Amino acid sequence: MSDFFSAFSDNLPQLRSGLWVTLQATVLGSLLALLLSFVLGLMAISRMLAVRGVSRVVVEFFRGTSLYIQLFWLYYAMPPLTGYELTPLLCGVVAFGLNYGAYGSEVVRGAINSVPRAQHEAAVALNLTPVQRMRKVILPQAWVQMIPPFTNLLIQLLKCTPLLWLISAADLMTVIQQLRDRTGETLTAYLTLLAVYFVLAYALTLLMNLLERTAKRRLGLPTGAGSLLRTRSAVDAVATTAGGAR
Image 1 (cartoon, rainbow, N blue to C red):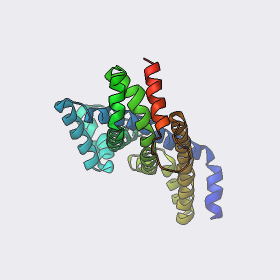
Image 2 (tube, rainbow, N blue to C red):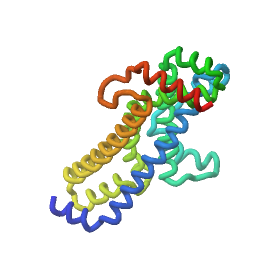
Image 3 (cartoon, helix red, strand yellow):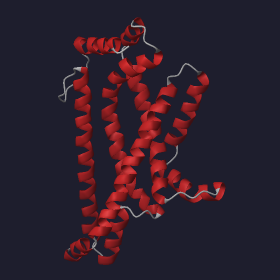
């Protein structure tokens, strides 16, 4: 154990670099996933059959195939087919974004559909355009319901970043694995990796909880751990805000 922690302290620059790669993959992958979640989710509720069909095909493809295979396809199979080679980090970002964006699109679709029909009708009565209705009335209420499942997807994405080791990315898993091979301390190495990922996941959870409380506060909803049932004052506040912002 002492050999491992001695090597750990001697390789702090490499560990910081590996941690930075892991954080980059998590943040950039989650941003891409968030963007695709809204694009595909909004396409899924379109009135146009062709748009809904494209969304369904994309979502089912990336949900129905393994992230492991998607990552390997981008890194090993795509270069011979296209002539373009992505860096390991970029491969990870694209694979994570596509995979979790497909799952996130169902979160967006479900949250938007759960907004009471009366809210849609109230927005129409205020003579808002479809874009204004979505931006000022529907999405603010749906966003509160999206945050908890988005938090789960974000943590899952973080926990998938060790897959980058398989495509030679110099992430945290790679550095810890090198220290394990050098010292032979398997138990200590993986316990350390578990602890680091737990800290990262807990920090992300706290940030998302803060985001959820902020979103609830803007709607006038209780910020405790209770349910997301809407109060009449919150509904009136959203409609009033939308009407005043026309």
